[in-house]
Image (cartoon, rainbow, N blue to C red; front, side):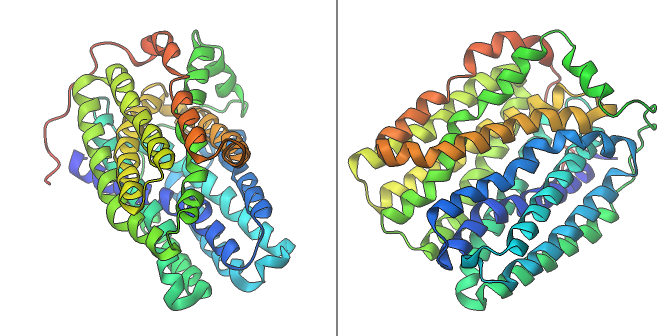
Length: 402
């Protein structure tokens, strides 16, 4: 398959992966707050993100049974149904059906992530990771904006029930497309105990530094992210304005950052990109700390948003290329799920305490603290260098057709 065709499937699948995450992380909290749900209860919604961390427990099932494209389609269908159920009850009363539907949504989303990541690892050849991850991050971020920005804006026009109907229809359309994805050409894996592949991976030399690196590389971003939109709201920006900024300004900056990051990763190699683009990634936290510290108005907040989106795209492109490089193709679902689960654990735990930190320190000092946290993984880089290898393939020839 030509690289251009591969990149089209990467874009579609990672839009499908990003859309549910944008709905769960950015859309649902706004929906709950708009219906009078307390901040404490909204904070507990982050616990529903645990399936993204625990998905490694059922990732071997995706490797062993069925085709990954069918797992993707089934997960999207379940998420569409969950969205239809979500607005049927008043969320202020926190009925059991609300939380069950949200848990079903996030569990299906986590399962889809496992299948999509594994499918993509099997689809790409060595040396194609950098360019593919630029497209991947761009599509994922565009989906985050669609789920967390565009759908929020639509709520003011068609109401929340209309929003979740549109979201369900979109997820079902993506399910049909995923069902028609090209069949993988990997030979069937040998029957093994479900966790045997995971145990073998953990027994490799250098596994502990690698796991710690994955756990810490995005710590600064994970700590800051849950407090960004509350910061905007406390500075007087409306929900519609936040959606507009994220949709029109943030998507351009994040796509540009992801594409630039993907190209630089292919040209420099993954190891150098992790250093340089990781430093740029930390700059977004410092930008928000400066804006909060000087009490900047809308122009400053917009600038901080652009900086965060662009540098976040840079850092994520190199980080995802690193994760893909250290996975074996035949057990990609299990191995990649383990690594992404660590990132999810960072997001869950850091997000759980972020509100406490911002409330006690204030936005400026808290954002400055998250800037410092961005560097926790850097001392581990020399220990993971051997896992990405030297003399990585250069960027592939431009057969993309764009």
